[in-house]
Length: 107
Image (tube, rainbow, N blue to C red):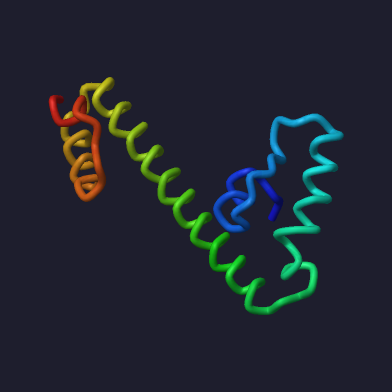
């Protein structure tokens, strides 16, 4: 697991940036991060480590769910483009519980 802007902001409540910064800014931000927000992690605070593990697991779950939805939407588009309307309807039914763009509802 790496430190990124989202993790720093959402879990550690830090506004330090780690992506798309100069090497100097990255090093300075990393130093400040470990001096401020990550003390519990460095000190092996088991409660803090457990919270971090839960946070990253949830983040991975959401990422995977979104990735699978994107793959299904690509399959829906492919079925439509190939005029395979039976598959199109079946795939849309599989996505029924998820929010669909209006363009899919019109089709």
